[in-house]
Structure formats: structure tokens, C-alpha cells
Amino acid sequence: MRGAALILGVALGAGVGPRPARAQPAPAVSVPRVPIEVDNCAEPPPGMTPDQIKVQASEHFDRGEVLYEQGDYTRAVADLVWAYCMAPRYYTILKSIGQAYERALDYEKAIAYFELYAERIPADAVRATPCDPDPQADRYTMKARIKVLSQLPARVQIDTPVKASVDLAQQGEIAGRQVVSGAPFDVPGGRTYTATIRADGYVTVTRQIETHVGRPTTEFVPLARETGKVRIRVTPAEAKIALDNSYVGTGAAEVTIEARHYTLLVDAPDYVPLTVGIDVLPGREVNHPYELQPIAQFGHRQLLLYSGIAGAVVGSAGLGVSGNQTLAGVGTLAGAAGGLVAAYYGTERDVPLGTSSLTITSSLIGGVAGLDVGLVFGGNDTLFADATGSRTGRAMAGGGLVLGAVTGYVVGEKKHVRPGDAAVVNSGALWGGVAGHLLGFTFLAPNSTIGGLGLVGLAMGTTGGVLLTQYYAASRKHAALIDASGVAGMITGVATANLIFNQRRVSTADTAATRVTQERTADFALGGLAVGLILGGVLTRTVDLPKIPAQLQVGQAATSDGKTATTYGLGGTW
Image (tube, rainbow, N blue to C red; front, side):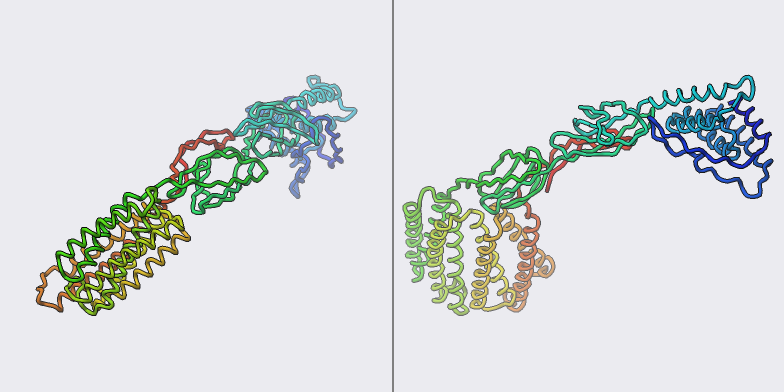
């Protein structure tokens, strides 16, 4: 660049004339022409004289030369471009700019400036000093240099999260190909290529890749798995469906997911869980119908036990109506024996657990209904007093036990009731009846009214339980947890009432105070029952969902520098 400074001095000493018309650069042969700074030179500030322009151009050139020697090529280019734009006759400065870009490894701009320099050498140009190269010979030297730089390859590397093949094409012609992604390959630089990335089971991706002469280009391309649609239909309709431990539906599922192998889990209360492998095919729809097999559960033993107890109650109620204690005792023994014999010989040994549970539930419902009917028609007599009304109520309760048991057994055998459904009906009847009776006590109603409210609550609870089984499948465990919540709520309510209001002892002779205490206790018991049942339902809402544990998840993610990193974590669905 020292010889260039001497030539600049000679040129500027001759004065600054009008700008010559700039010749268009010759079409590039190997490297597309990139825009350069001198394509849009700014005009000198208005009012500047030629001498002032000469001085500024010389100052910028000198500063650019110093920066070049110091290795600050970016700032050197800025000053050299300014010097050239001030003195466009000084064509040799184009070579200096090209050399600065070459040192900065920006070969495309270096080529553009070298080409423009070769074009601007006049046909009659001679050496400015004996030490300078011959301009005509330098033109050919520069063209050879351009050729060498143009042949510097661009190294392209495409990284993907999985093994993939990569094709680079330009204008429909394959310029490079790698069977395994991540392996670098060399292509002519300064061009835009279309990269096509393919991997088995993944969506093909196309990406525009800008390359630069003599410089590497690395890109990370994430790949998405191909998807397919899967339809799953399961019997029974309340079965829960999960794919790879992720819940997708109940009874039926239709999802579009990644095309690969999955583990299907189908689970329902009182049925044998099903675990199978299924393959989801890319771009296709697959259908999988399944039918779960019920778990073989038998209730003959519990039916025998209950029949003995219920028979004893019926016998005692039937023969104890007369008020004779001896007859009541004989009736109890005879009833227990009769119940056991009837259940042992009148039912199958393999009676399903659902039928057995419904038989017991229906029998209890019938017994409570009989007691309430006795209260309704027995006037205001105390339930267990030796009054004609209460004896009639006990007799009706015994008859209700028998009638309810027969009805439940017949319905269970005909409808093939599940144990969970029987438990739901039992819970509905239990809490409906309890709520009805408690409501009567809160109003200090007579026994006939309490019996009526109990019948209404029992009927509504039983009906609600039956309707609930038509839309929701619950297990016996689920129903038992909700029942336990109701009991806990009632106990908490009674305890709260005692802590707040019943700190002092109330005399049994104080009838008014006793009635007030009973009313408050019933109020709190009813409120605690409602809260307990609601909380139990909310807290146990996922009891009957498939057991989907958290699993270790290993994946890959792109980092800020375009590389891949392995990630670890826990995943699942709750």
C-alpha cells in the first residue's frame, strides 16, 4: 500500500476533475457479484473546494493505510472507501480495499473490488514510480488472483437431532450430498442453495442455505416426526385409554400423533386391564377396537353372611310383634337359619359380586323404607316403644328387607350389575336417607314427618345413584372413599356443634333446652355431611383414572450456538 500512497499523491496533485462515467462490472463467471460500498458513493459536502476535497481524501487514505497495517481491516475499509469516493480517479485504492477484505476473510467483497480494480486500469496506464508494478501486468495478475479466490469452497454442515440425509441443490441440480447429517461437504460459495433433509419417520424439511466463499456455514435443522391418526374404540364405554402413559380418552379416542410404536393401556374398574403395542403409520389412519374382560368376582360368601343377619332381623320383627320376648328370640334364631338356607340353596355358588352387592343394597333400602313407612303411619310413637304403630313399623321393616333382597337379586342377575354400580346406588340411598332424616330433626318435626322426609330422601338418593351409574363408572373403592368422607364430615359437624354450643350440661328435665341442642346438632351434622361429600368427590375424582406414573424423559434441544444438547426430565399425565 506504500506505492499506492505515492500514486495517490500524484493523482491528487493533478487536481480533482469531474467524475468519469463508471463502467458496469463484467458478469461474474464463478462467484455472483455482491453489492459493495463504492456502488453508492456519497457526494462531497456542498461548498467544498477541490483543494479541500484533496486534503480530506489524502487524510482518509493515510488513516486507512495505518489501520490496515495495524490489522483493523473494518475501519481501514471505511477510510479507504471514503478516500476513493472523494478521488475516484485513483483506481489503485480499489485494490487496497480488496486486500483489506481479503485479510478480513470476506472473500466475496474482495473479489468484487479486485474485479472493479482490474476494470478501472486504463489501457495506457504506466508505472507511477520504478518500484510500482506494471499496471497492465497487474491486471492479469489480479484476474489470476480472482480465479484462485473464487475457487475457495464454502464448507456446509447441516446438523439434525437424528440421523438424516442432506441434499444441496441449486436451480434443480444437486451440488452436494451427505448420507449422514453433521458431516461437512464443500460446495462453490457465494450462492444460495436449497437443502433437503430426509429421515425415516420424520417430515422432510427444505431450507435455504446462504453460502460464502471460503467460509463455513453450519445450521441446525430440527425435525418433526411424521404424524398419523389412530382411532380406538373400547368396550365398556367407561374404560380409560392411555398411549405411552398419556391419557387420551374414555371409551373412545381419536388423536393425530407422531407416527411410531406406542404402548396402549386400557383400564376400567372391575375389568382386566389391557396392555398392547400399536403402530401409528405416517399419513394413514388406523382403527383399533378392543373389548375388556370383566374380572371374575363372586359374592356368595358375603351374601350368606348378610342373609343370616337379615334373616335374624326379619324373624325377630315378625315374631316379636306380639311383644313376647321368648317368641322374639325364637324368631331371631329361625330367621337366621332360614336366611342362611335360602341364600345357600337359592343362589348360585358363582353369583357375581355385583349381583350380591346389589342384593344387599336393595335389602337395606327396603328395610329402611319399611321403618319410615311405620313412622309415617304410626303417629308420634317412639320407634322402639311397645306401641302398635312401632311394632307395625318393625314388621314392615322386616318385610322390606326380604322384598328388597329379592328385587335386588333379580335385577342384578338380569342387568349384570357391576360391583361399582351397586356401591354407587348404595351410597346414594345411604346419604339421601340420612340427609332426609337429619332434615326432619333440624325442624324438630314429629316422627311421622321425619319418616316422610326419610322416605323422600331415600327415594331421591336411590334414584340419583341409579342415574349416576348410567353416565359414570365408579369402583367400590371410589364409592367407599366418598362414604368415608361423608361419615367424617358428619362426625366433624357434631363435634363442632358440641364445642361451640354444648359446653354446659343440660338437664334432662329441661325439655326446651334439650330440643334446641338436638336441633343444633342435627344442623351441624347435616352441614358436615354436605361438606364431607363434596370434598370427598373432589379429592377422589382421579381414583378411577388409569395409573399413569411419571417417567424419565430423554430428549435433545438446540443450543444458542446451533449445537445439540441432551435433556433429561420427568414426564407424564395426571
